[in-house]
Amino acid sequence: MVYTLWGEPDSGSFMVEAALAEAGQDVHLIDIDLTKDEQHNAQYLAINPLGKIPALRFNDGTTIVQSAAILLALSEEHPEARLMPAHDAPDRRHALRWLIHVAAEIYPLIELYDYPLRFAPPETHETAMRSRVRQRIRERWQLVEQAASAEGSFLLSGFSAIDLAIAAISNWAIGNEWRAKECPKLTRITETVAQRPVIAPIWRRHFGEQEN
Image 1 (cartoon, one colour):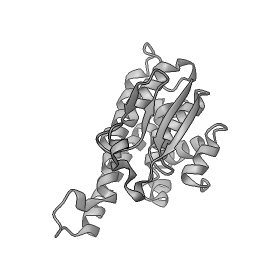
Image 2 (tube, helix red, strand yellow; image 1 turned 90 degrees about the vertical axis):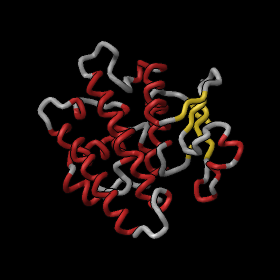
Image 3 (tube, helix red, strand yellow; image 1 turned 135 degrees about the vertical axis):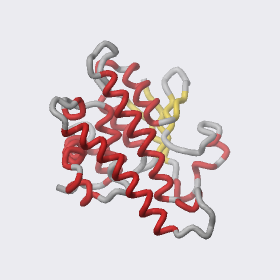
Image 4 (tube, helix red, strand yellow; image 1 turned 60 degrees about the horizontal axis):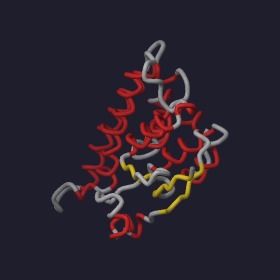
């Protein structure tokens, strides 16, 4: 089985590429250069009308978009990879809650941080808006940090697809120095992901060398 993955380095496609590596699956990578607005060409819009990456085509020809949906689909396709707790596992509900929290409450704010004037009138003070968005992103990460710090937390009980989402998305907007100081558990998750044998080369291609 060979999957086709549309993405680019330093993007959400890292999560999918890493999940496929953990599942031992081959993948054909198609880079979409966001700096050239290739996500809005007609060919790619036919794959994802929202013009966003990643998108993943399965061996049966089905194409899935939305990172969380892709990760959940892969966890079902390859249960042996243990990307998510089994359906009857006690931690399943917690896993779903935090994956969706990161994907729905944090990830969309990255676009707002990077391109604030897409969502506000031209007279908006861009720097001030970015500052407010960054604060909101940090607050939502702190909720994840608190959950990871709780005794017996699912988030530090073993590797899962949620670790991939945490590692990738917490690299953006909030600042690595702030994350290291205010969210040490999330920093630990990120460092562990970056050092996993099958993921390490993928991490370096997307994000460079992991800082200690």
